[in-house]
Length: 113
Image 1 (cartoon, helix red, strand yellow):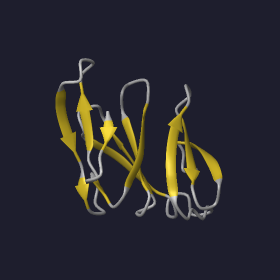
Image 2: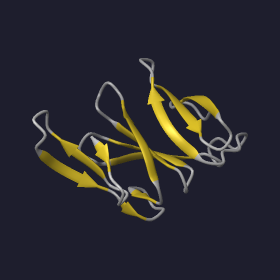
Image 3: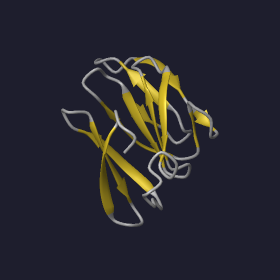
């Protein structure tokens, strides 16, 4: 899985053959304003960070939208300025970095916070 400059996520097989792509400009589910990073969990679900929209979106490995977190709505106690990177651990905690504020935050995706 890779991201490109046109706000798309592209999927390739292990030999580098193109399989599919999804995403385009916008603010609705499956759309991005500035896609900055992706991470995969153990089931190959894709988590995508949108810098400008301040959201994280979750997709299955075929690109079907599953969930969207708004980093200012679902996590209202936080004040993100510019989301940048994302990572997941074995317990499916999400780690998101903020480029402008120089910090990282850990989230449990199964709860409100």
